[in-house]
Length: 58
Image (tube, rainbow, N blue to C red; front, side):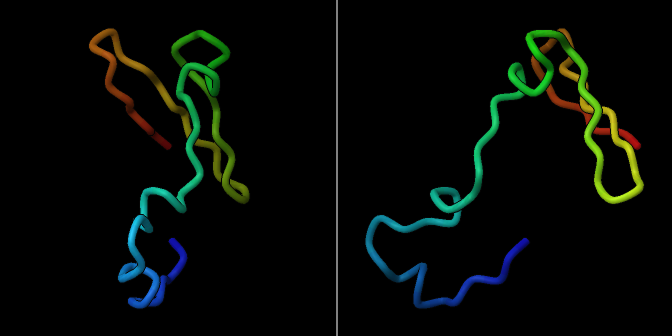
């Protein structure tokens, strides 16, 4: 997470959520229910459950 200066939160209409990248989970999984996410040399499994929840495992 990137550090944010307190002054940036004081500006009207600027929130932490508006600055974060947004990704649709169904696009990440190409319409399926699983995707692999790589961070450095680690591989994680992102899974969408039948209940519509996300689970990220190593």
